[in-house]
Image 1 (cartoon, rainbow, N blue to C red):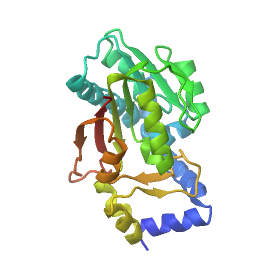
Image 2: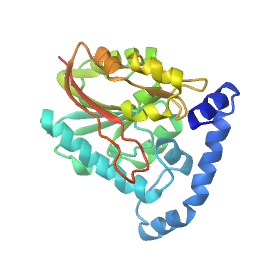
Image 3: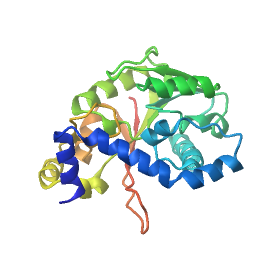
Amino acid sequence: MNKSSVSKILRKLGLIYYSDKLMFHVQKQKNKKINNEFLAKNPGVILPPDYLIYESFQINYQKYYYESRETALWLKGHFEKYIDVENKNILDWGCGPGRVIRHLPEVIGKNCSFFGTDYNRDSIEWCKKNLKEISFNVNPLSAELPYPDGFIDIIYGISVFTHLSEQMHYGWYKELTRVLKPGGIILVTTQGDNFNVKLTELELKEYNNGNIVVRGNVKEGHRTFSAFHPEKFMKSLFRNDEILEHVEKKPEPGMSWLPQDLWIVRKR
């Protein structure tokens, strides 16, 4: 029995949360030594509680902090290809405990204003207390943001669509484009063809027909709620705007994770 079949059974039995919580404790114990070493070497680095880290990444403090900074640099490089990043309003949609956006004031600067939004109240509460250079707010799971029309210049969402239902894809994309200025850009990552190896035979058939595949039976938005995105579906989602870039990075030898697809879209 493969992992996909096991996951399906756990979801049906309502045991997926317990399985995920067990994995959290396993990772925490496994990384205890290296995490204590990181804290000893970096006493000035403030980190969220372990479970908030686990929900958004993995419980490895060094990777969480430094790889997140690399992601911030990666974002900057993509932004600059398509828009001047000076004096811009930049939104991290689904920011979690500020894993990436905490680095953007240093990485981008240039008189930009930074905003983070997430449905997880614990994450936003931690961010508000500890990341003072950024404005944070809690959003509902439904597609509602507190910003006026055309307020944001750049929006990015790292692995956010991956935890939403099909209906929410359309609702949230409409809301994101509402708050985005004309000519502004949206950057998102999704689970594309690289993730076919995780699909069951029936799921793969649906995926190859160009339909989004969603694994639910858990709270939408949670890390265990998973969506897989064929190119046809994403192009349909973005059909009213200009797709600037779609990158499908293939796994490299020795890589322990599957690269997500990158999509960059400009609002018409």
